[in-house]
Length: 152
Image (cartoon, rainbow, N blue to C red; front, top):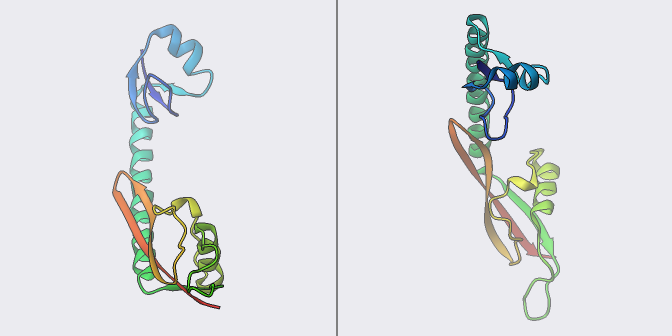
């Protein structure tokens, strides 16, 4: 029996795949649980339409991410830190603080989990951190944010 998977099924395939399974597994497990539909001509057309819509949506997301990456090139996120007598900074600026700084200073919302460089900025001056803005079948978009830490 041929079925089209509506969601990922471990050891069988990913969402959108057309696979052959035994009749009992398809009729008694996959289809009643909404994990698959029988592969018919109309379901194949629906799958093709859904794939086209999803690829258009992914292209739009990538385009937005590229625009955001271009905008991030010209942005400096400013932080002030306490400095000891020897000129070394107390503590560090974490990706969470950078996320909050981007939101407060520039109105840009980026999840802290998107930072590729997960280490904190712990030195005075400029630090460049990479952010993964988009990852998908169409490729990957990586932006760079400049963090400027100055003496308080």
